Amino acid sequence: MKLLINCKDDFEAQLIEGLLSTAGIAVQRKYRGVGQILKIYGGLGRDVDIYVPGDRLEEARQLLEHREEEWEEP
Image (cartoon, rainbow, N blue to C red; front, top):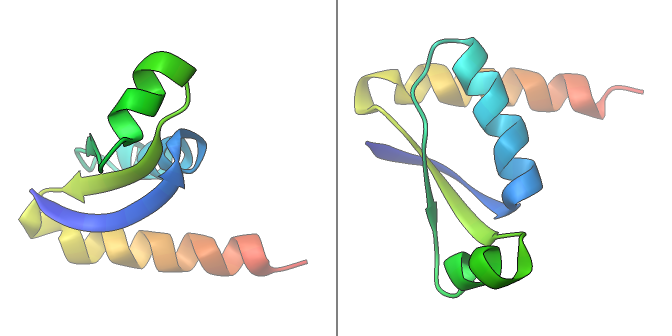
């Protein structure tokens, strides 16, 4: 698995995971530092890394770039 992106919180991670899952790309989530502790005790994790299979990394990057362009449009 290769690192695709670091998200600020679980909400952002869930949006990205949903997009990737829809495209059939497997996703693995890992928390940095105290992010996992915040998830356990506070319900919302912080500093979340999203990993995808190495052979799908470029495809995942392109999906994110395309989606970000759509989100920025008024």
